[in-house]
Image (cartoon, rainbow, N blue to C red):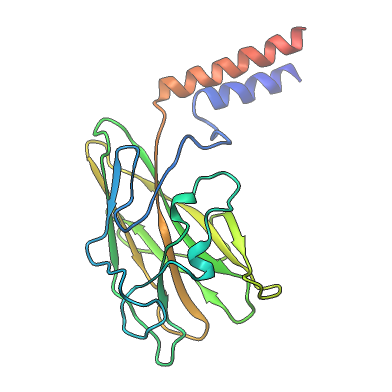
Length: 230
């Protein structure tokens, strides 16, 4: 048993296994979000565009159930996203096919790698087909994220029985070392029955240097060994 414990601890120390918890993720609105020295800008957004119109534009809402998701996530991580959502209504008659949105996150330390996240909504409604296509600016193609992806942070049913909306976080990849910015591209999943896309925001998280991760792991190993000796 001692050998198993030591092997696991050393694996964590030297990066062979991921740490279970996140470092601090800075969550930003795609519409000028600013926190911890980071800023997210998306030039083509217009908060005057209604969320429900069939105009092939990303609509904005600050009041519907989906917009209010975030404040109840239990961690405070996405509180800054409560009161806003950007919507593609592909289920309108004829459907919407909205343009790709590019959100640029600035303020990165050029000597640091960062994990990048996207925040979107899914639904468990029997006829709902909610999802989002997202990719980093350096990626060749989009990945489609739906109700089967990411980590659920908050949910709400808005009094609609057993149908819930879910706020999800999905890991997109890492920034490029040496760059002070990273781009996140969003696209809808196209028109169709029950199809909608809801963008909530983006997240950025510094990746610990290998030496720091090793020290954390070795500290955990020392604690485990001390407990077993006592």
